[in-house]
Length: 100
Image (cartoon, rainbow, N blue to C red):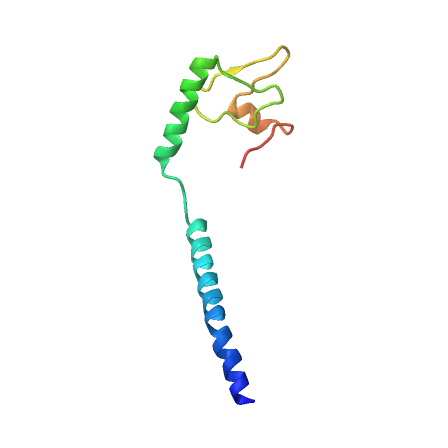
């Protein structure tokens, strides 16, 4: 009986070791992702890309609204009867969407 237990253990040991190792690597990966933040340069590149896109297309259309203006100088196509609030007005307005 001990030979059978040893044979089964020897058979499954590499598999269990592989699973433990994979789980450890996965946990390390999740930890690395939780501590990751994009460099500020990436945001600047996105801003420049947005500026170029707006210059080419004439601005962004936000028919259903825009939660917040993504950067200074952002151009948008406005529609009749829409309102644009300053940052101070948006903060004071209970109906305004507050971005976190």
